[in-house]
Amino acid sequence: MDPTPPSGIDVSRPSVARMYDFYLGGKNNYPSDRAAVAAVKEALPNIIEIVAEGRHFLKRVIRYMCYEGIEQFIDIGSGLPSADNTHQVAQRVIPNARVIYVDIDEAAVVQGRQILNGNPSTAFIQGSVLDLEPILNHPETRNLIDFSKPVGVVMMGLLHFFDIDVDRGILNTLRQTLAPGSLVSFTHGVLDFQREEAIEPLLAAYARTPTPLIMRTMTDIRRIMEGFSAVEPGLVLMHDWRMDMAEEGESEPPRSLIWAGTVLTI
Image 1 (cartoon, helix red, strand yellow):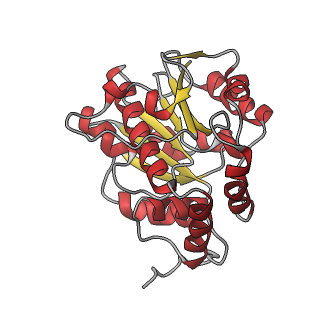
Image 2 (tube, one colour; image 1 turned 60 degrees about the vertical axis):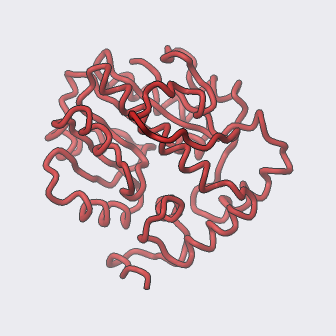
């Protein structure tokens, strides 16, 4: 049985946050989301493996940031909380690590707050990466995040929903706000290793959601990063980024050729 939708939430249209919840084995999704996932799986049969690879990348990034001395994080476009959330990974390294989760999806925020209840080092707020000021100045953000110290910001699978100039504006706003030593990570769908006809069904599936997907070449993704320094090895396929940061004993993730990721220094 599907969960009762939060009051005022329209679940007749698919939500990217709830689709990711389904990919990761969660239960906070509805028929519209599962239908959209089915369409994506038709276009990209290994989408579950790709999402698992993305979660493994996120975990390595958070661990890297922790070992660089970062104790506070903002996860923008986080989606619904699921296995190995940002705060769980960070707090295994730094027990008092603080995490702000941000999503535009009201249902994700409501359900996320329920899941995080009782963890005083976390908060879940509603906001859009297209309007960062209310996120950065939200009372809960200001309560947990000390902007005079380095912050780790992660935006997994987010920037490929916007134009390049918009993405650059997001990064520049973060640079103007965050303290030196901060780190910003993002992932992005990449075209270089895919035949155009192979991803057309994928793009069509996302075109039916409120947030159509924009795949780009590595060259175009690097345009987003112009003016920023990247942690080695730079912008690479997710599987090729710092596998030495994996948790001890963790299985190697699946390898896809469709998602790239990086960590930028501020």
